Image 1 (cartoon, rainbow, N blue to C red):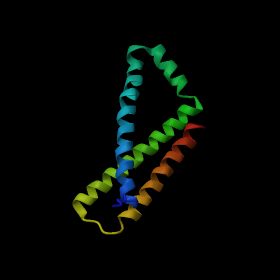
Image 2 (cartoon, helix red, strand yellow):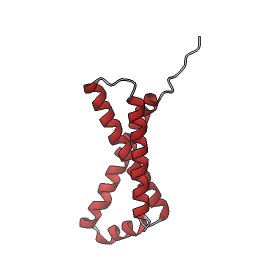
Image 3 (cartoon, helix red, strand yellow):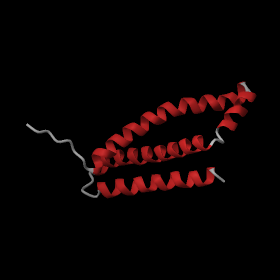
Image 4 (cartoon, rainbow, N blue to C red):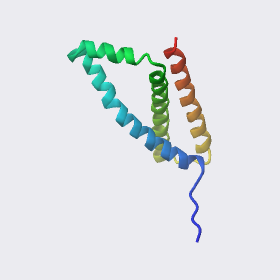
Length: 114
């Protein structure tokens, strides 16, 4: 008996949405903690801001912006699926959403490296 796993775009949309949500759930508390340093320990906040200038940190931030955009697109897709009853065009919408997320992340990277 052979079992095959679905490999279509909506299968991947499901996993991208879940994984981007987990990554954001890990990132946001860390981000809020760093922001709270501005009120509680300004010297540590300045160190965190200086650390954020590192190219690898900027690259990670670019990835986070992309994940946020993907998660937003995935959430809107799920909302639409539950309320609109889409047809086969779902794959195209997901593809356009991924391209838009990549474009947003690229714009962020460009602005972050100026």
